Image 1 (cartoon, rainbow, N blue to C red):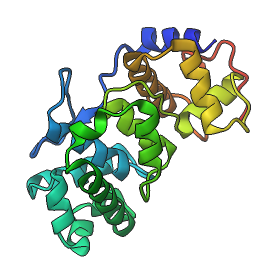
Image 2 (tube, rainbow, N blue to C red; image 1 turned 30 degrees about the horizontal axis):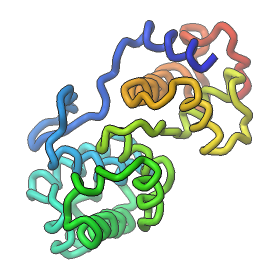
Image 3 (cartoon, rainbow, N blue to C red; image 1 turned 90 degrees about the vertical axis):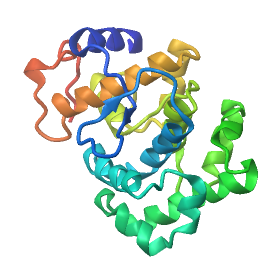
Length: 231
């Protein structure tokens, strides 16, 4: 069933091309198809942290501010006063807490990997995930986002959209845990970062287009056939 949903969504929406990279001065995301530079990888890490409890549109504004002030660099984030960093990322919401989270992430990479994401990303998925989860402010979804989109390693990202859609469709229980849902996807597709990337993006697309939290537009939804519409 998980595989069928993926094929249906891909047919309707086509490839989404995530993760968005936003250079200085750009309002719309630029979808980077090739290998990411070290700076872009760090930008993705920052984006994964900043997108907690907010929309990507708000994160974009914060990322543009960080680029504008040349702050997509671990040591520069550590040097800048927390209050000033918080103002730059204010559009993302919860900016004081997120400033601390960015600094905690950067401090960990500096202390353990000589400020090198490349050294960090050489670790296995299991080690990366364990270490990321040990950093203040990084939970399972953020950790998996960093592993999948920045490290380009296969670790499926589960978000509220995933749980909403699959529980309505009857593929999972509403009480299913993060790790149970993650295992469901990974057991179906094996270690395939490209599919994980695309599937997660397609789920977000469906959730924002049809499967809304309230008042979903079921009649035109590509998954309406077979959906239990339990909301």
